[in-house]
Each structure stands twice: as structure tokens, then as C-alpha cells.
Image (cartoon, rainbow, N blue to C red; front, side, top):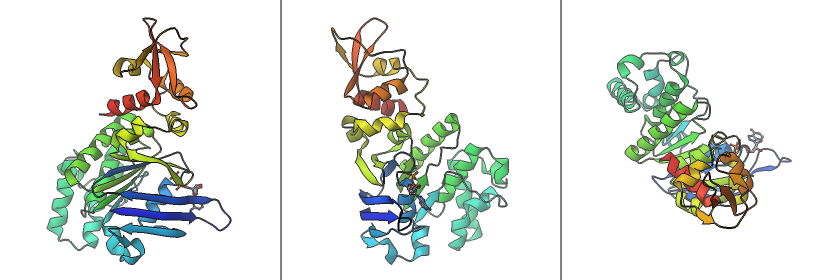
Length: 312
Ligand code: ADP
């Protein structure tokens, strides 16, 4: 189990607090998603856990032991890290990139070769074709597949992923989301995934922690978040995401929204989901007119439920 206990982080003495009394627990084997707007402290949280930076105060524990009390190298080997900008070494082949950690663990050449080939196969990259290629000979999506398996190569207990798909096109992003769900199921490692995208959080997370200005605004299972969302900030995540061209009709058609009589609708089902999310910022529900002139009550729960189901 991973625990953050009253953790604070100030990058410099006079600056605002980047992490402000963060408390959380992550169970072994969870798919834990940390979601929040840019600047809310997500990357800082991951980096503190990996000891890339040190907290100003408070304790971070892994399996009941303070992370400062672990040997740094051994601790890092227990934590894979996938970065947004992929960061494969450009002058090393794909196989060499994947086996960096196994090599530092002094695994035999045969064992390293085997693990690289097995992992490439697992993520749909034919090793005969890809193992000897250089990173520049792969697409962005393929490179990130390699970035992911590289983090798994030494069989760590914990895998940290910091916005790994945000630079990818929607199709690659979708495929890789499916891939990490599959890998999580197969490996049973603890995945900690950072994103600013609520759709992605709902798609991937067993547990979702919503962060704002350095602390947790809400934490719970995906169902708990859907059933009891904090409207005022959940809304913020829907802006500039993938709902700009999706129509509210999709929600009305797929969710059990309540029909309302004798009330004036505020939006039509042909309006965009992002418009609905905007209105839900300050209210419990929005009244939507469907093409057969019925009026439906659409709540934040309806919206989140739609997003979560759409992801499955
Ligand atoms: P997120 O990952 O949610 O976008 P970050 O953890 O990167 O957020 O940043 C949290 C806060 O800490 C922000 O206000 C950011 O400007 C600040 N911050 C992050 N890294 C540094 C740094 N190296 N020096 C000073 N401030 C930083």
C-alpha cells in the first residue's frame, strides 16, 4: 500500500504551496487515477513518490515504510515510470530501450532478449520487425507502446504514468487506453495514472482522485464519483476535451434520464455535451428538449455515467 500523510510541497520558500496537505492511500493492485487541471499538483505528487523531488513536510510510505528509508536504487527499480514525452533514447534500438532496467539489474543477455520480445508481442509490435529499429522509425503511438513496456520490463510493483497519451491522436490514445487496461489486468501491478482529462480518468480508473490546487477535492471508486460528483469542479474538466462535437442526444438515448412535464427546456439534444457540462457547473440538472418535443432532466450523474459507459 502507498500512503501520503499530510504531505506539503513548496518549491521555494516564498512561493505558493504546490501540494497542500495531501492525504491518500493507494491499495496494492489498484488502477488509481489522479485527475485535475493543469497546475493542480499531479506531477509533483508522482515525482515525490518516485523521490525525484522531496516533499517539504509530511510522510510518504510504501508498504508501511517511509520512502526515505528505502535504498533509492532499489526503490526506483520497484517503480516503472512512463512519461508524457515518451523519452526513448534516440541512439538505442527498441530492444535496448526496453531492457535498460533489466540490464542494470544484470539480467543475462538471453533473459533480456526474451523479456523484450515477450513485451513487444504483448503490445502488438512484431519483434522481428521492431526490436532492432531505432525510435525515430516508429510512430508516436508505437513509441509510447515501447515507453509503456519499458516501464514494465523489470517487473516492478508500481507503475507511474504521467499523462502518457496526451500528445497522441485520438485513435492512438484510444488504443493505448485499452492496452493499459489489458496490461493492468494481466500484471496486477499497481498503476498510478495522471491525467487532466476526466473522460480518460473515468475510462481507466478503479479509484479516481480529483485534485485541485495541491489537495484532493474528491476521491472514490469510479461509481462513487459518478453517483456523487462535486459539480462545481467536475465541470471544469469537460472544457476543451473530446465532447465539443458530441451531441447531448447521445446521453438522452443511452441514459435513464427523467422526463419532466410543463417546464421550459434550456438546451436541445442537438447541442454539444460541452454546453451541457458548462451549465451543470452551477446547478444540479439541465432541462433538455429532444426532437419529439419531450423535456428531460439531465444531471451531472447522467453525464458522468454516459462518459464512463461510453468508455467501456
Ligand atoms: P500538474 O501536474 O497538475 O499540472 P504540477 O505538479 O506540475 O501540476 O505543478 C503544481 C504547482 O507547482 C504549479 O503551480 C507549478 O507551477 C508548480 N511547480 C511545478 N514544478 C515546479 C518547479 N520545478 N519549480 C517551481 N514551481 C513548480
